[in-house]
Amino acid sequence: MIERTVYTEEHEIFRQSVRDFLAKEISPFNAQWEKDQMVSRESWLKLGEAGFLCMQAPERFGGLDIHDFRYNTILTEELGLTGCAGPAVGYPLHNDIVFPYILHYGTEALLEKIVPGCVSGENILAIAMTEPGAGSDLQGMRSTAENKGDYYLLNGSKTFITNGYLCGGVVVAAKTDPTKGAKGISLFYVDANAEGFSKGKPFEKVGLHAQDTCELFFENVKVPKENLLGEEGNGFKYLMTELAQERLVVAIGAIAQAENALQKTVQYVKERSAFGTTVDKFQNTRFKIAELATEVQVGRVFLDRCVELHNDKKLDQATASMAKYWLTDLQYKVAEEGLQLHGGYGYIWEYDIARAWADSRVQRIYAGTNEIMKELIARSVLGK
Ligand SMILES: Cc1cc2nc3c(=O)[nH]c(=O)nc-3n(C[C@H](O)[C@H](O)[C@H](O)COP(=O)(O)OP(=O)(O)OC[C@H]3O[C@@H](n4cnc5c(N)ncnc54)[C@H](O)[C@@H]3O)c2cc1C
Image (cartoon, rainbow, N blue to C red; front, side, top):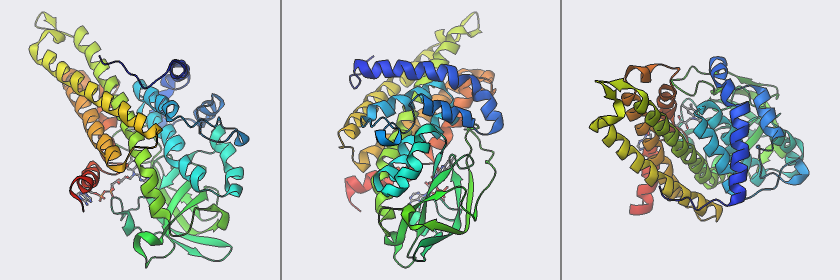
């Protein structure tokens, strides 16, 4: 195996502390959380207490002021390696997908009000871009935020929102000027207790059973001016800026979950007997495992390089899109082949590979579908 060179000894000490924490506070509860369709609020508080939420937040708000993305990566990787995909999606979304919008574009008044809760786990974050009629084509969104002087009046609905049911606050994309296309979109932080804001029940999904994905509804919600993120009309620009990290975060989870699925499969085929031997002795099994191990190794090296680039602020959109598309496809392939090598047991929910298979499917859909990723890559290679 190629040695990983991205991490120092300090990072590895941190990794061990994350691993110990997850083994004690996350993995034992996942089966129950799958039944509940959400992780517990307590788990968020425990993560906060351990210092694993919004590590990049300034110290004056209780954060650790850590701007080395490798620490965030380690947390996402270790979550992926637990095989608990619901938690592996929800916590990194809070830390590395939603929180950056608040940190980079929030007013000082907003930061003071909400960041301590984001760090402690009391305030769970979500981001709402997708609408029933607009997913890939975000410019087609219909939610509006009308400027009323002291506040914005928000109307519309959003769907498929990760952390939606538990969230205390959500970053919402809405049109402040419906005549201006992308330049008419703005971003707001909306408090979940605001009058006129309601949530649907968590969806019954194919996978990610411990993830509280739901619809959000906004009916004449008064959003204070100080909750506008950045400048009015610049929302689409901010989305395009921050989406590279979102895609990288999904790719980090994907390679870790692929590694986990491969490891579970290797363990299984060594133990399972058929025709007087174990399944790992059949040539088909050996070739499949060899192929998957090779692709996972290729993916790991590429991902580590992307993390390095991102840490140096040099990861471009097209490369982040390559990582998202290729590694989530790989994750699905490893889970699918791994399930086949488990035979009938692979189809039984209590087997990790069954979960890995169901959980992997959506990775190719959210954070921009893999078709959209290919479109972005093609634009960078071929031009528009
Ligand atoms: C479990 C889950 C969690 C999610 N979490 C969030 C969240 O937290 N926040 C949020 O805002 N959204 C979230 N989403 C929404 C997700 O990002 C969208 O589902 C996704 O962007 C696709 O949009 P859509 O579902 O409307 O599909 P559509 O855009 O209708 O796409 C349908 C099909 O058409 C293809 N297609 C569309 N346009 C093109 C094109 N130009 N070229 C080629 N093919 C194209 C797509 O690739 C897809 O195969 C989540 C979704 C799921 C399922």
